[in-house]
Length: 136
Ligand SMILES: Cc1cc2nc3c(=O)[nH]c(=O)nc-3n(C[C@H](O)[C@H](O)[C@H](O)COP(=O)(O)OP(=O)(O)OC[C@H]3O[C@@H](n4cnc5c(N)ncnc54)[C@H](O)[C@@H]3O)c2cc1C
Image (cartoon, rainbow, N blue to C red):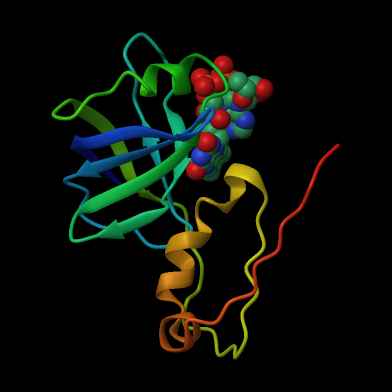
């Protein structure tokens, strides 16, 4: 775990209530790990899964559900974000598995993007199974 001050590169809505924030200055994150973000006026940090990381640039997908995630939508390019990074054990990407099946629902899919890119099978073959679910 590291305490790092990240810099907002972009922060945009993808769909109604789902946002993507891209932050610079994150030294390392593995698939399945999460970061804990401090927000002005809130005592507790908000945990968000790592959706992507490359060369210090961290991508997070978040769903606006309450005060903290609503505050996150106000972050603008150049703003500084206090984050605890590299939290959690992450996924084991060394497993010898020929056809990994990644399953997630809703915003729970966020950590699967980076996992897919790091699994040797996905990188090599670019084959994947996509399923869609529906809720009443
Ligand atoms: C390890 C981890 C990874 C996560 N990754 C993501 C992610 O990639 N994208 C994403 O959108 N969300 C993720 N979440 C959920 C996210 O942390 C909460 O939605 C966020 O903290 C809510 O904060 P808020 O102030 O907006 O809402 P609040 O006003 O605090 O709460 C709104 C609702 O969210 C619930 N909630 C609040 N905090 C948490 C929490 N820490 N864990 C579970 N439920 C909570 C409350 O019970 C309430 O129902 C993750 C949570 C954990 C524990």
